[in-house]
Image (cartoon, rainbow, N blue to C red):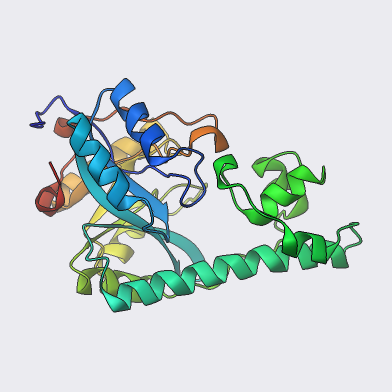
Length: 282
């Protein structure tokens, strides 16, 4: 399928290989139904479903951009970096991803141990034997706690069980500088995901400049957690700098029911693919 300026794009999508609910087949069908001309798969620290989605998009005539959403730490905060077009046979990249998966799995276990220490009636051995059904989305400890009736959903998990005063913090992943360098060494292009995912009073020039200075090549301006004001200001700054501009729904299927593939709506004419164009598979 040839892309035009009017082609709809969604460059931030999750499958059941990480915390989404959709299989590759379901994801591509969703893209067809939403008239997406260019889509990316960007599972968290995971490459498992990339080849299958690549094959399915080709069958359906959808342009495909393979990606990974990699966890990193920058100035003591968690930031996600979208890595597009990487050589997934690169040993340095695979070592980084495997390390991140180990850290996330350890956080699963630590969160359950934390709740046991706080007096919740949880059998650790039962949790350790628990088989997590990835079709539900999310992650093992969340799914287990929902099944046991200890929390309702992902919002309850973070806002009540692990709110900031009592939280199990995210692991300290590799620095964003290391992640960016690793992506580039693997032939990929690093893009900053949703820079204003949470409320942040840092000005756009100040915040985004910090990441450009360490090698980030573009910004995900369109994201459901970004207000129209943030989107427009990010677009203005990125256009002035001449850097890559992307758009993504951060779609997770039924796991985050408020998100829809292709929303916020963006077309090729609204973004700046830059060097990402060379990574697109038709």
